[in-house]
Image (cartoon, rainbow, N blue to C red; front, top):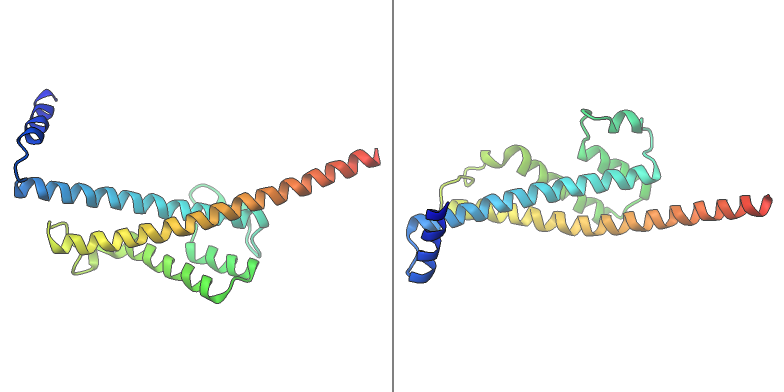
Length: 171
């Protein structure tokens, strides 16, 4: 461990141009971090979407069975339910569908793309860009859904508070 830090210190102090190997390792590190960020951001959007739908009830879905551990939770099915439940504008529905397609491409098919390789250079940078675009889209949706979830909880608290007040008044 000491040797690693000594090497890092030596590189820092020498201020020399990084070697090709060091550049390659840095590119790979950045790519792997982006893949992790995109994966977590997509998972968060999916969870927030399911939580939002759960807050208002899914139409025609047995929620406990669908949300049980081990049950597949299809993002497409949740988007259709969200559209039905809230009557979303078609432009937002299209945006969600585009996210689902990007997410599916990332999760299931990214390595089938001829440009998607782990070879350092322009091919890796193309794949890195795709992953970064997905991450940014997921973060935008997450901000929106988290705001809607907060609003949904506020409404639920207001309804519960009103019911409690009515019960107290009736007592």
